Length: 95
Image (cartoon, rainbow, N blue to C red; front, side, top):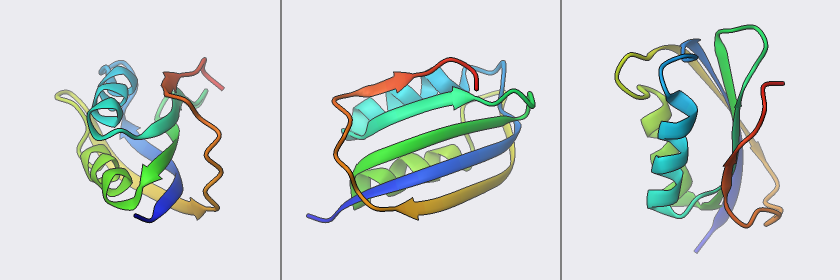
């Protein structure tokens, strides 16, 4: 099982539509660990996802659409070295 780490930036109408909580629910469903937070620009959500590659890819695919009410315009993925530093998936304060 290949473990991976993805640092993603989701842009569009992704704040104020329960994107972070919904992503946490999806991450927990697939056993993905990491965090998600809003960016101060008001139109970006940032997340770090760690776990089995197939599970991380499922969360990324979900993020391309997001929850009802979201309108994703762009999703950027930066693959990073897996660190295994998270015990769960959390919502962080806006950065």
